[in-house]
Length: 374
Image 1 (spheres, rainbow, N blue to C red):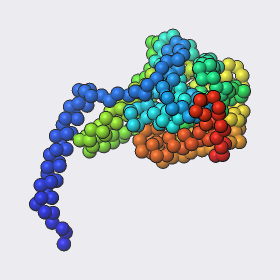
Image 2 (image 1 turned 90 degrees about the vertical axis):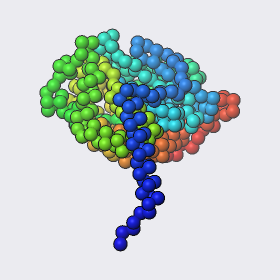
Image 3 (image 1 turned 135 degrees about the vertical axis):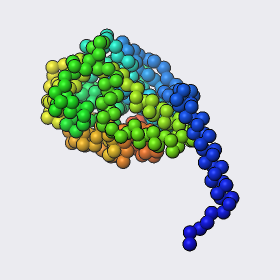
Image 4 (image 1 turned 180 degrees about the horizontal axis):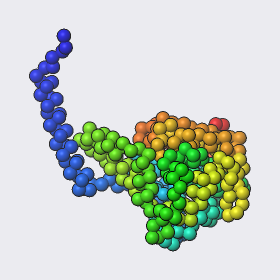
């Protein structure tokens, strides 16, 4: 016979449900009204170089234990605070705590002055200038380079076009190379026949709203699912704060400079240049096989924004002998935020970079080489 709950157990359950419904009502009002929005991107930092809307950030730390410095190159179409979402759930915070000297190249919010920016402007100008500034500030001779999403594509083009660049290692995360598998975001320009010029805003750039709607078409039931999950846990203050931060980021994009968008669609989407070895930067033919620095690619098996099929070939395209692949059972945001990130992604990336770095002495002048094993 089924167990009959005691009157006290029933009463406790009723009380819990009443309390949770009250908390749901309170948190729901806060969400709708926009009250108590969590702070994002709070890790202390300084702007150490800027050009146009682009800034190079240096994260403050008094416990740098490894060199050379680590430069993160972010994507061109979204906000970089996903990597520094909230205290206790921050990729940047974890890197700083691990003892790295961390820099971020943030593109800011492009406007009409950036509409003419081509990929070569980022690959041959902004990234090299940022690297030079880091070397000047740190006294180092190399940097470890990390590219996030489309920022990974920029770092691949940079490393391929500048084989003598002062790089100790290159890590990319959620970086597509086979654009045939990028879904509706690519299909509208190939099968659909749309042109970039047809979607440009008055400032000459692809508007953020176009990018947001494009991502939403990848998961048409995503809006319903996330609201169902929110209702179930709306009573939980920590969950609500994380929900606000993550959904805020997923809807918070920046314009994609028009000239770079045209070049991306032609070279990476129509020509599928990374797969067909038809890449050019500033008129020069470049090859991913010319990348020979220690290399790590990290990708998500459940990534609906950059599907696994789009990232899978990368490991075979680069020419590095010391190259590794990390495939995780995670979605796009789950690679850098949440339990999978905290338990697997971040520790693995830290371990890869640490093994290819130098342990700094107490006076930061004597370096002892760390084992270069995988």
